[in-house]
Image (cartoon, rainbow, N blue to C red; front, side, top):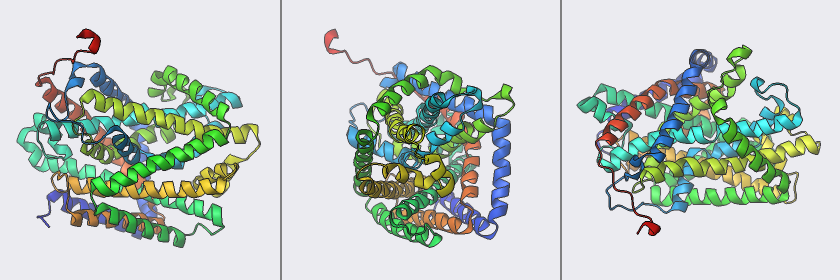
Length: 505
């Protein structure tokens, strides 16, 4: 193996230190991280809202600007992957496992506890608000955050030939300093947010797989079952990670898309189809109509910001914390596309798919709970949110089969997310290698699984998730300066002429 980089050494030390803290004193870790995160969301909630909305505004500017004609690569380069493969990569790395986990639970939470700023709502009003905020939290803003990071990485890597690490995007601002302590600090923050963000998601994914198995078989969703799930999944994704991007992750990503579409179409046509499509259409319009107001809402004059802090600000911080991982992976698979095509693809397609997903799963759950008397919320409160999806599926014919497919989908997302993360961590800790050594990927894979397993055992998983989100605050500031650096580089570009349309010729 090549000489280990400072980023690799520092990141591994920090990761091990936090794991030990979570094992030895999980309550202390949770107390410290919760206090820090509480301070940040309470005092800087406005900053998260302004930052996330600013990133979305910047993405829209790139789509509309002549800058959008610039290619992420040489002018004669074609995209490395076709649209189906590319979109499957985006969906898998971005938030696939989260959509499965929250597709039923989040709309139900908002249905029973809508944001106070919406006023006193009856059940029908609460249903519309529940889906609208689900669209909002998983729609344009998070994907704009991802697109900004991914674009900067892809532009400097493929257009300028820089190393594929985030610090390289700061060369127009910092010059040679990116190769010193500042650049190392930026890259360590990237690795910190990635390894802990993915580890906590793997932990929560494990509990949902366990909840599905428990729901189907009656086996207790015990710690032993969860450890066995992590062991089996680790073997699969470590095997996949050794095959590289174009074999393991590529095959799994397409499998995820097929399984997700099968599951969604089943519920769309087995469930209240007309209600679902009406909900999708109406809520999409309501989302677009209320987008600006929701983007800046803090409930300041209600003197109760807890809902916004618990949901919107939490989500914006979470997506920013995930942006280094997802952005690096998206950049890796987006060579050869124009900036306009890239930003539109990264923002629009996943947003529409996510909106349809929440309409199908959340809309069905609300219909069952409100109109048909099935106590979905009661199940969430008693058995945990990880079982909500399976309870909904089993209200319909072939529900057991669909539940098995859902477990396979979660497992597949689990494997792909972990596989993608080991790839990204390998890139970021080997000075941006597009094909990081298997040894480095193996080390990061073991650290991820060990982190999830140990903290599930010690009860420190929630604390680690909070620690990961704390990294979002400095990274949001890093992103702002990254945009300034990117604009400085783009200003020096010669904009390619607009291609004439057929009727112009």
